[in-house]
Image 1 (cartoon, rainbow, N blue to C red):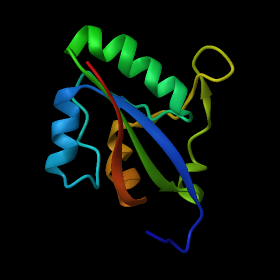
Image 2 (spheres, rainbow, N blue to C red; image 1 turned 30 degrees about the vertical axis):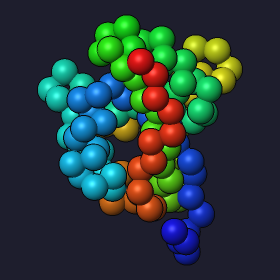
Image 3 (tube, rainbow, N blue to C red; image 1 turned 60 degrees about the vertical axis):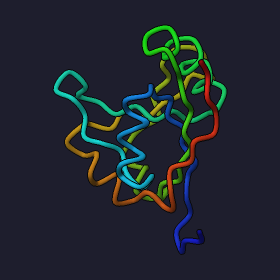
Image 4 (cartoon, rainbow, N blue to C red; image 1 turned 90 degrees about the vertical axis):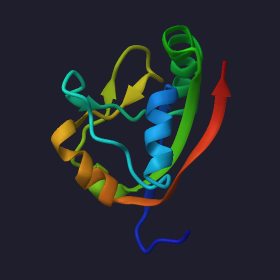
Length: 117
């Protein structure tokens, strides 16, 4: 899908339950956060997302998945890049109450790119 706006590629590692919710939303939006999830954390590189899905989601949920999606770059400028560990462990911290706004700036569909069991 083409957009008149520049986009930024983000990745999100998810477990089976969140993946099912994304599927129910026709791969176009992220579901609302649960009360114990005040922040939505998309990550800025695929390797980091793979490590989380493979090493954390599989252990806790029995399966892990990596999704990829595009968001309008101008919109994302409001969220400073957070370094959550090593220099390649980069993520955005989107407050749960702003998730609908982020969803409105997704360009195209959310793609499932890796699966681990």
